[in-house]
Each structure stands twice: as structure tokens, then as C-alpha cells.
Image 1: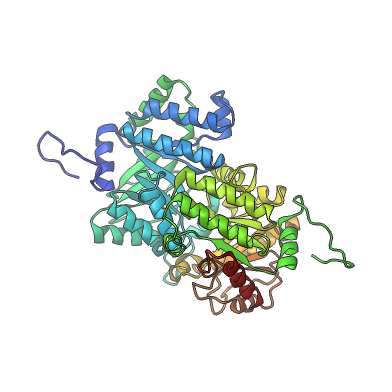
Image 2: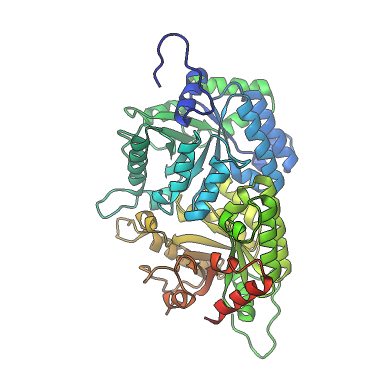
Length: 281
Length: 281
């Protein structure tokens, strides 16, 4: 996004996800805070391992950081543990984060085919109460199977992040397997996302690439979308390392920190100080 | 499962998923009915495209078929469209199906790493209100990343179905990619599931293999778990074809039919007749 003059163009909800993401990063810096209310964190906050505990943790975090960070990434699993009651908390927190001016990337890693994939697209990128600004997708059924989500994201100014190359040790057994030409599965995801973004000009298709690799092992040349980089902090990646990983690529990098920010709570002041510290690294 | 004498051993909730599945198949035949309340089906039933419509469709189906079929496979996406209200319907329908003696395979295709995967295991294979008898899993992050779900299934007499070789055309780009020894991703899933089942003796790890392939292209030799075979009916597979596909393998095949059963509704008698007809094929 280029701007002319001193007054930035107003970015509204009908702009593309890419424009909205770049605008909020320009204002607040590139940091996404993961909302992972897992039992050990609840205990550290002296909260019960219950849906009430989850609600308290995530709403406190969003209240403290909602006007400070570019995006939140609620991890669906920790809400699904509590069934419909947990999903009600997720719906609330999506609305509160957006009201505070942050984007919401629902980390649901959904992936299916046909009318089922269309239903996931409707749920997370359409008119469903769980729809945020973007959703993560898992492509075991092939990049093309996710098409209904791509179309929904592009139509509604939202984004998707396709799992591409993750930081866990077992990830390579799938992601580094090769097609007959010798190209890896991960590289095929990048190439197909790049082509789709070039075709639409919307950059609605982002990638998830783990932040703990020493080198990427994939080629991001020409990819113009956004890259979500989890694994910063508790999992061993650093903000500087995440930027380094993307050197030379013209992507919008969005480092994501979960545990090491949340561990600073429940004090709102300490949550804010920890996020500020990460933004200065 | 082998039985001696004429009185079958009573199978209770503390038995392994594999034992419970084989017992219900012995009584009712091998048929799993998918619960996919998508908009076109709701319209065909003259129901509104709303959470009330979804509830009516799935509860009517479970009431009609709950004492007749081995298992139901609710498709999570169609409930998630309606957020927490939809998940409340899913919770209800899981309980009603189990109360009628059918097993419930929640088709959620979840997959993640570490404490997030542990949370999904708790949600769908532990004490969460969304836990059925089994859940489908998506292994883009590697078979090993799903370990918390395997452990939970084995500990609680439940099962998992790992996406292996699907019937959609794009599936091969990931599932038929090869490791340096030339083995496909799909075959690696089978081999790792086989090894795990042999190690535990519980056969808690099943596979999802699409029913529309002419030949499998993978080797199920020695795999002793259960194989969920979607794609029967509307997607072009047949019950006979599904059995043929498994010829020579010592698996517990569970053909799954969704649209072509549900399209027979809302008449309970027609739903029952359609399921009976499939069981006789």
C-alpha cells in the first residue's frame, strides 16, 4: 500500500484484508498475539480450568492489548474444549478485539472439500458468528480443495493463511515430500498461493511458516501476500529471526507470539509492557 | 473380535473403540450415515437455512436411524456455520445418537501440534461436550503431531480416523508426494498407523480412504484398524465398490453415505428404507 501526502487514506471494513492488515501494521507495528488459554496458563493466572477461566483470560488480554497490537490469533482448540459454551466466548472475544481496532485471525486450521469446505468458508469468512478477519487453513486435501475459502475471503475483504511449512519436527514428512518434478509440497503451496494472489490482485491468500527454522528451505520470491510466523517466544523463535527469515521477500510478515505474552498476565500493565518490548525487538 | 458360543460378550463403554465398532457392525451391518445439513438439503426438506432447520434435520435423522445404523458422522462445518448455537445442536445430537446405540464419529478433520493438539484431543476424545466415539484428523503437520489424540483415544476407548487418501482430484498433490525413498505420504500414514496399532493392540487408529478410487494405490497389508470410506452415493462410490477396494485387507471397513440417505427425508420411513437398501447392497 503506498500513500501520498501526510493524511493516510481511511481504511474501512470493505477494503481488502491485505490493505487492512498493512494499515494496522503501519499504525501499531507487526505483532500478532495468540490467544491460547491452556490449562497451565490458567493456573499461572490463578484462574480455574473452566469456561469462566478461559473467558477471563482472553477478555483481560484483549482489553489490555486491543488498542496496541495489530492482530489477535485465538486458537480454536482451547475454546472447543468447552463445547458450545467455549465457542460463545470465542464469538465475544472476536467482537471485542475488532471493536478495539485489532484484526482477528481465527486459528482453526480447517480444511475439507466441496460443500463442506463451503460451509467452513461461510462459518469463518462469511456471515457466521465465528467469522473474524482471517482464518488458518490446513491443505492435506490439496491447495485447490480450499477454493471456496479463497473465493469467500476475496469477496468479503477477508484473508486466509494456508499451513505451508511448520516448525514441528514431524512437519517435514508431509511438507517436504516431493512431486515427480522434485518440488516439495510446501513449495507447491507457495506457488499456488502466489499465482492466485497475482491473478486477483487482492493478496487474500497468506501462508503459515514456522519461525524456528534456521533457513526457510522454500522460495518466497514473488509471493506478495502475508506470512503468519508462529513459534516466536516460548517455542524458540525470535522477532529478529522472523524478520531475517523473510529477508529479500516482499511479503507482509506477521510474527505471532502466544505463551510469552500471556505469561506476563494477568496484570494489564505487564501484558502491555511485554507486547511493547516485543515490538521494539 | 472372535466370539465363542452363541451368547455374544456384552460390549460396554470401557471396551476399545475397535471392539465397540465391530460389535455394532455385527448387529447392524457396516454403514455410517453422514449428518451434513447443508443448505440444499435443508431446502429439500422444506426447512429454513437456520440453526433451527439444522436441528430439525439432524434430530429427525437420528430418531429415524439411531437404532438401525452402526454409526453417524456429523460434519462439524455445518454446525460451526451457526457458531455456538450450532455447536449446541451438535452436542445434543451426539448424545441422542449414542443413547440410541449408534457410535458417533465427529468429522472435524482437526490437526495441530503440542498443547493445541492436546486441547483438540480433550475436546473430541476426552471430557469435552463435543466428544463422540471417534474423530477425524488431518495430518498436514505430520502423523506424529497427532500423538496427543492417539494417546487420548487409546486411554478412553475411543478412536481416530486419519485422513490418508481422499477422493477429490486435488488430494494427490499432497497425498501422493513422495519421501526420498519414493514412498507416498499416504502410504507413510498407513505404515505409521499400522505400527501404532500393532504396538498397542487396541486398533484405535483408523484411516479415511475415499470410496471413489478405482484402485487404492496404497498398500493396506497388515493394517488391522478401521477404514472410514466416504464418497459412497452422491459422490459416485458404491457399497460394493467400497468392499471391493478393501479386498484382501483385514480391515474393518465402514462405508459412509451422507447426501443420498438424507435426501430420502424428511419421512422417517423413507430414511429407514434407504438405509436398509444400502445395507443390502
